Length: 418
Image 1 (cartoon, rainbow, N blue to C red):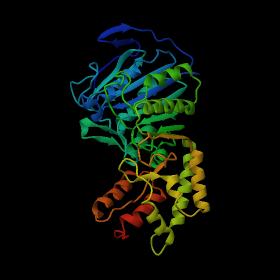
Image 2: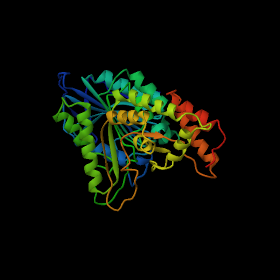
Image 3: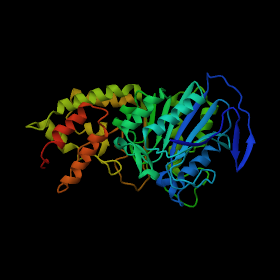
Image 4: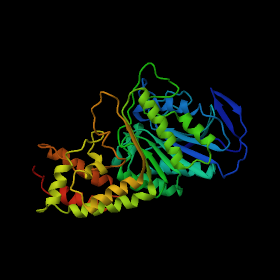
């Protein structure tokens, strides 16, 4: 890491439209104080000059109220160009730390040679924000691409390197902070493996099983971004106006605004809020169900699993299906009842919107948590096995029964015949 320059927190200067203005930040009671840390990886969303979705999201953030009690700290990077002229475009691998106070933006730190797809980059940002902006409550927001068990936030300046689940876990553990809520404005992240990694580090996970769809048309408000991007100013204003709100209440405010945008522009949407304290029970019941299915040798339960995983709609062209919906195709057993009840207990909020005329049934199958399934397609043995191996490699940090079961019954076995 190379630091180019640093602004000392004791001499606060806020950059506004190329001008430095003095601003006073008074001390505040920690009881109702918040620090919101935003990991904003520009990637190809920002590279596309016709899109610039990250800059539009930042513009929305800068429409929030100014508050002593709610500190908004962001890091930008991971894109070869930026629409906001005050974000440095002089080198592709720059990252910058920011504080947003109302409409003003203050650069806090500026580094070169930083890959936002590495654990160290996320960990250092989290530790910086937590140590320099002490609060009673902390929220964490991610924005960029996501791919469930494969990870999130793709750094376009380092060959689209992403934060894999192991790296995400390492960075969060290094921050030594449990967040009140984590919002992933990334595709496909309401996933069991993701929730399992997040469980020690956040109380609530706000995410979607489905792709976060971005569409642009001329009628959209350029200050607020695209469908798929919430009104970030409304999120921050909600916290400013309701500083005693719980992570769950903030999650519901995120979901309400998200669906308002999607409905206005008739864009399909799904969103979940997951109580991370209940994920251990989901994992336990899921693994008990895998025990019940058993191994492939002369096993009718296994044959039933193999047939049924082909039936639900997949999410985002990845081998992902809704856990609860998949289990509904099986004969009702105590294992399946326990699994479904555990999912219902963990998913505190789950909703979807499908505009009239859309026929994608994966949305109305969503119960809030997806899982990888070892799908296969005839005459595509090599490609499909690569999917299986990719899942196993991406989730080795979890070391649970399902990964081992995939390994022994699919990866290490002859290609199954239908």
